[in-house]
Image (cartoon, rainbow, N blue to C red; front, side, top):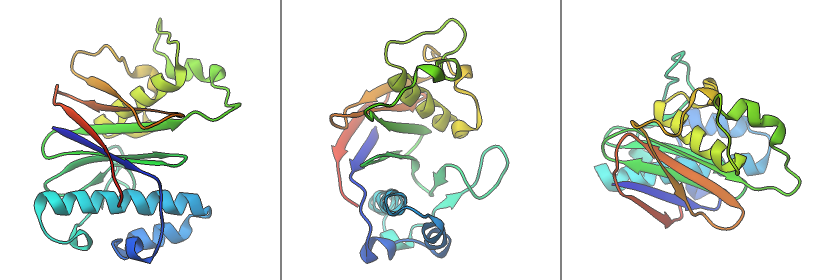
Length: 195
């Protein structure tokens, strides 16, 4: 089973208290309040879900972040006993998690006036076309997160018809497209949450 939780970003002392020292430092480096709120909310969702699955208090959950490509202190967050992926866009923060098996998630907001047509060559694989470029983007980014590489690899190398990957579209409300990717056909449960 894959669980997808989503909510609007929030920030405040109670949520920041769940963060470790490295995360607090990262929040302080973020300039825009909305970026701080999205980061804090994502980590709070992750810690709360992990604590519920593995036991203990959310503050005690150790979140490790290491890039799969270069080993640097960035990339997909990991916790013992839980596979997870976090995404955010606009006023949506999304956490996809499961006990075993990799998972990737992405969400993209449909913003008025946003022109994506000029990005088609960066999204589509050779010979591929889609009617909804933003949804294709969300699906492919979810696959890249499933692989643990995120946008460090080009989307043009992702084929959505790959039999080893299942992508499920998510309904996170009007104005958003989202998808979750896995290597199996585990059922997906989506719920609105709060950190």
